[in-house]
Image (cartoon, rainbow, N blue to C red):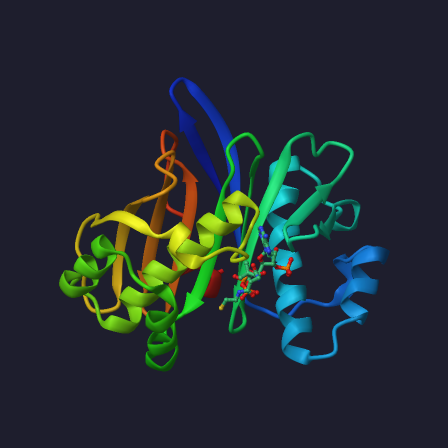
Length: 243
Ligand SMILES: CC(C)(COP(=O)(O)OP(=O)(O)OC[C@H]1O[C@@H](n2cnc3c(N)ncnc32)[C@H](O)[C@@H]1OP(=O)(O)O)[C@@H](O)C(=O)NCCC(=O)NCCS
């Protein structure tokens, strides 16, 4: 488990955002009554695991942002589109975005005036084939897929997570034609090796947003955020296993 405090800069304005990653199955003690009841309604173990890991990551990120050590005082409800909604006496405009994949959950707590979305996927050649079928890649995305110096499975995950992160930042998730969320530009930052790299991208229909994506061997993490803002550092995925 790790929690990272990051600075979000927009012109002269600086705000704190907090990123958490959780990879060990927690007990249910950090849930409040309503969340425990929601957990009790899930039939499948995988859904329960994802929910628990995701809620812990979200509450750790929010706990760090709001300086609230008692995670039961933070309530996260699911809105009608599945979006996480935060309730806490000091929450103000604090919001959170969550993703979980194969035993790892990540969350970013942020001020709601800077909408953000995260998405995490586990790289697999099998799901890459499904992804490429569903993406209906735009011309710039196809051009990038043809030239990106990473394997196809990782490249597909970069595009998929970048789109899903935007859907979450917009609060619609993937409840829309997926092409609406496509990228118009994507470029590597620094060295790209097989399965590893970092990229920044811009969206075709949402030029006010940008995405930051990083591939880390078996996982890809993307973050969608306002295009004019900057993060002081990249969220760290690797530390989840080290901490
Ligand atoms: C966004 C969506 C795709 C998330 O799917 P997922 O595979 O469970 O992916 P992740 O683990 O990355 O994210 C789950 C989290 O996203 C968040 N989320 C869900 N819908 C959201 C929305 N509309 N806006 C912002 N965040 C949302 C939730 O916090 C959720 O975790 P929780 O349910 O434990 O609170 C999904 O909820 C959605 O939009 N579904 C409708 C369309 C659909 O199913 N499409 C499938 C195409 S393959």
